[in-house]
Image (tube, rainbow, N blue to C red; front, side, top):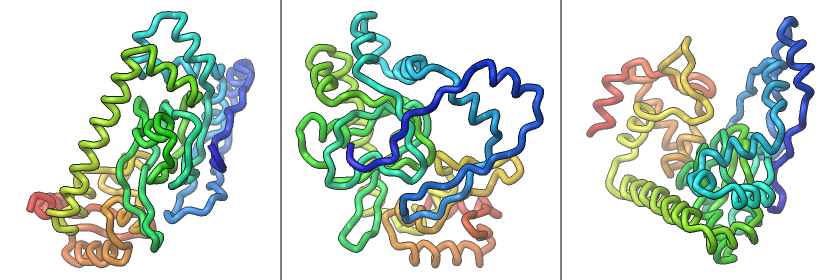
Length: 288
């Protein structure tokens, strides 16, 4: 797969987990990735028990749990399911690490169990434009296309947060498609879904004002790895650079528009956060 952040999860004794129930454990701040990226990152606060509990299940059972999200696996007979599991492995990808880089040839197909992968193109100036996101129960069509045709990928794929996935050997995946109709159908469904999204994206880029698209994004969407908190339900943890990549614009332009929204009393800008203060006004801009 080239230089990526994939790692194999470690196992922890279930007996140790049982002993943790009676302990008062400190909070652990997980370190951010060492790989350079364009977006500001925020440390994730989790407990030590959560770290250990998440790694107790056997890799095989976790593989089964992931594949159970996919119809081509659940529709297969026991013998075929076993072959699929044998030709796959469980991997973890840290936030802001690449699954594949633009111009590479992935050697495995990733089937996402948890987390989110952002697929984006980078122009000669280094500006990013997000094409789509791949989340739990999905796969990346460009990943599929590269495996099936041998061509390099015209975009990059990076984890937005910690990703757990089953990755299937490319040679076996090609064989599976030729033998199992539901696996073929999964390819068609994946391409149809993401192509519709990409066409919608380019339609928005062509015909909608950036101000409208920004308001629409803030009003309707939250980044998949940073949902709103109970304490601040109208706050979004997101950087101006991330918004620029999502909307296909420059960070400076996004910052100017957000400043305009703030002066109008629609949002309140903080470091790495945007708090919506007038949701109705934001909605009015979004539906223009």
